[in-house]
Length: 208
Image (tube, rainbow, N blue to C red):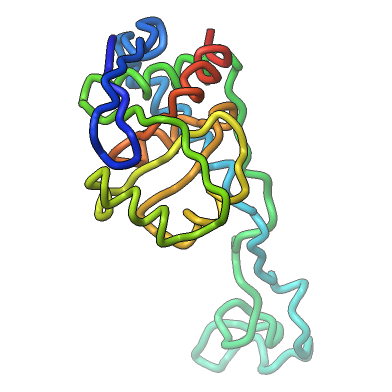
């Protein structure tokens, strides 16, 4: 697949770049995409939720009424789950939600996501970004030139650039990621995937 390279002014540079078919041109595997997204979201969960059961609540253990003859249910103490301030039955406790996928399955999921984006005209290739100072207004101008100031986009660079990171982090509809950390969820979660020229080589090396 061949695509045009766009400059930061939003016009064509006259150059074209080849996107490898074994990464950007395969038939997407929907089930693998589901597994990869499910794993990513599960691994974001902290699992620190907790509740107190009746053996953990600090309340009186005195029997509050006689066992029989009251016309109501028996109650052994104020820790009973039916009373306000009592324990909770079958409440949540800290647990590990993390999941694990095989390396080849995760790579197939990323190739499927990239291919899906490419097939749906969701990939834009631009020349390498270079910022000497971290200016949010400058990054916002780039988005406007690319006609993506109101589009949820993900910019992928070959390496980490602190100035670009600082310039883009306050723009809610734009996200930044380096090529080696690109994951299936981030690819699918944006409307437009913006790849720099040098990032394509990094993605190819990672997924080949």
